[in-house]
Amino acid sequence: MTDRDVHLPVAAQPTVDSIVDYTQRAEAGGYDCAWLPETWGRDAVTVLTAMAERTDEIAIGSSILNTYSRSPALLGQTAATLQEVSGGRFRLGLGPSGPAVIENWHGLEYGNPLKRTRETVDIVRQVLSGEAVDYDGDEFDLAGFRLRCAPPEPTPPIEVTGMGPKAVELAGRFADGWHGIMLTPDGVRDRLENIERGAELGERNPEDVRVTTGVTCCVLDDTARARELARQHVAFYVGGMGTFYRDALERQGYDEAVAIHDAWQAGDRERALELLGDDLLSDLCAVGDPESARESLERYEAVDGIDAIAVSFPRGATEAEVRQTMDAVAPGAD
Image (cartoon, rainbow, N blue to C red; front, side, top):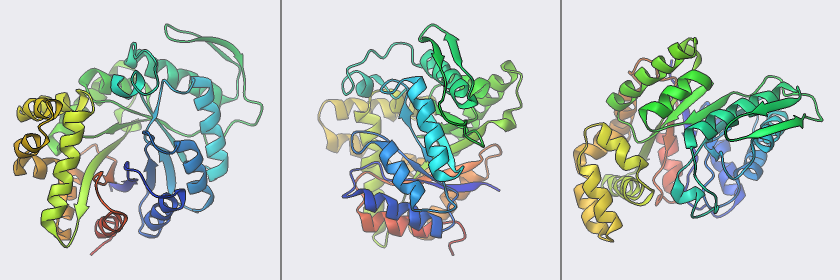
């Protein structure tokens, strides 16, 4: 059975309490895990701590902490601490993000994102083992670090993001899980082949790699607004967040992604939205009335190899709209 997770809103929220409230609502609704992004608002670690302390059963996870703004040793300490605070419910989501974030916002060189992610995972695993860390890699060279507390039990899983075939293949080789976004059901099937290839190269069982697919959802009484919010959300990511999402859609056969990106970059937001047609929106999102949204999610759940669907929300959705959507597609909702 496919798990139903929730990816908490990426847009600015009024208070930490409001984010915790979403998590408590997700727990009451039967969601399996609440994933928290870290973008340019509140830092994720502080908020994840509040989420852990004010819930009882739902798993909590970072999706994602980037592999540049914190050192691997600090990420290991963070994972160990959050596992302790949550009573064993923490999942560590890592990813390289992109140059628009790393270079423009953090002032760091983007470098080799795949190698950096791989080495970060290796080091975090050593930290979480409780043993002394000795690592000599291309991106990191460190020795002598060791936790001054008991290693976490159980060891939190380390899950990574990735968009392109090589990044997903690497996830299959070394990660405990992979998170995919901006993918249709057929797009996920293609990436699962990369997971299987990577697992084979790493002499692993691909079933040991937990696959989580994020799906943008918006369920409102006003179905036209639900679709418009989702359209604006997708256009922003395709057009305004580097080239990763554009390329992901183009690989899936949506050639209009290039035109959407170019129009957005040229400042013609209206044209970008026009180019994002209803067919693409329906293939990629779960929007509209409750029945239609649930049917869209079922198309993902029918893909053999997906372990969890992470319900996410458009950037422009209000708190009330997020809650309505969360309730409408909660596990077991009628």
